Length: 383
Image 1 (tube, rainbow, N blue to C red):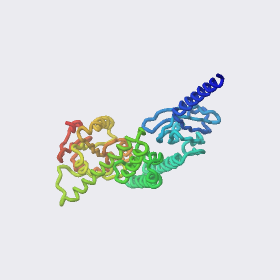
Image 2: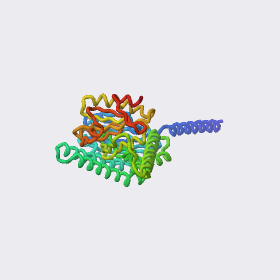
Image 3: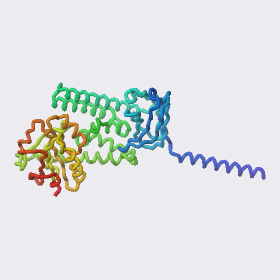
Image 4: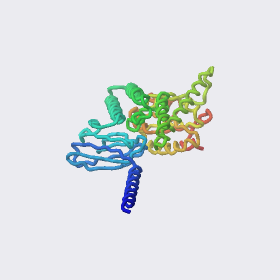
């Protein structure tokens, strides 16, 4: 009887052990990021998720004299993107369920001086990319300062900024994106920004290949990641836009002569230095709202709000907005237009004011079915 009871006890203990192991196995694995931040006593250190475009605060700690911190959070099988934020500075990192990072930093140079004491290869690359983007940003800011002091021309400013951005994109593609498209570093490199402006352009033929490479890899390896559908959508739209533009160019090249149009052509550069044609834009869309404006005008903020509302409804009407700035200061135009989603070009010599016989601004025209119609207000473009 005693032997039987012993076996029953062993069986119960074994079952309990298996249950505990199963419970532990079902628990989500957590990633860890820890370390020290000196020279920041009394400041709050935040860990935030930024992988889906929204900033979500996950944890925080008030730093003491030693500055020790340790954050843990449920990980995933795909890389997710986070940052440590101290005041206005942030350290980016990626993590999955196996990540363990150890870093040290100072509150005096939190982003520019942080070191990774223990890290995976992807986060070391993310640190490199973030530093290179920061140095490119600083060079662009220096150029803008020179322009503000009248030491360089507007053309020199535009070409120099485009050259810096081109070098940055080339380095990202060669050293990170095409090397391993499914890596967290590749995704991180693809979405680097200067302020609100992305370095990679979804409508650029060369940049389109980078979006497609990363989107294909993430769809294959991380299809359940919450940002993968967004990445695929960008890549597909980029491919469609590129193909549409190439088809238009082939069509125009086959014409023996350019047929006369019912409106004067406009070819001007946008804030990225890309020359955009009004004729080509009109060929791609059923309706084009041509707007002559000046962002320095008192009426400009109200007009921008109105046009944002119209742009949100563009798909319903196949509408594109082609806005021509007649501001006297190109920096004012560049700064004011950098967050606008439609086409914004700058008429530095005010050539097209004469071509369209404008008496006042703002002025609005609708190009529909190849014909130009003068409008009293931009809303008439949707009638």
